[in-house]
Length: 150
Image 1 (spheres, rainbow, N blue to C red):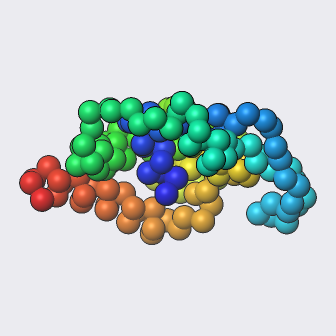
Image 2 (cartoon, rainbow, N blue to C red; image 1 turned 135 degrees about the horizontal axis):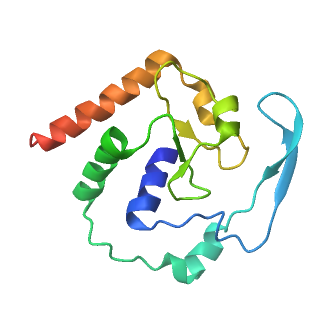
């Protein structure tokens, strides 16, 4: 879900609800490792979003077919595996810093970095090596099928 939203933000200007938040909010709870931490909970509410100027749908000129093709093309050919962070909090292309490289799961081959939008962690920690390989194969297979007219 996060990589789909990330691509839509990059390709079609879908806004970050965290960036649009009117006030800073946080929640104190236990993190993934059981430590008490403060979590970022600043989001523009659905009601506030729908009442804002951001809710007016821009016509990007991209059809659903073009967005679908673009998604698979992006993750099979343009995404910088092992370096880039997919972030819906900061929807721009940026490179993983030392924190992501240390706290994420290291795979022998370049992996995917997905920022948890609430708890600062790399969601790749739950991705097994065989599933990462399968994910890459499926992205490649999808783009091959789309480009061959499927």
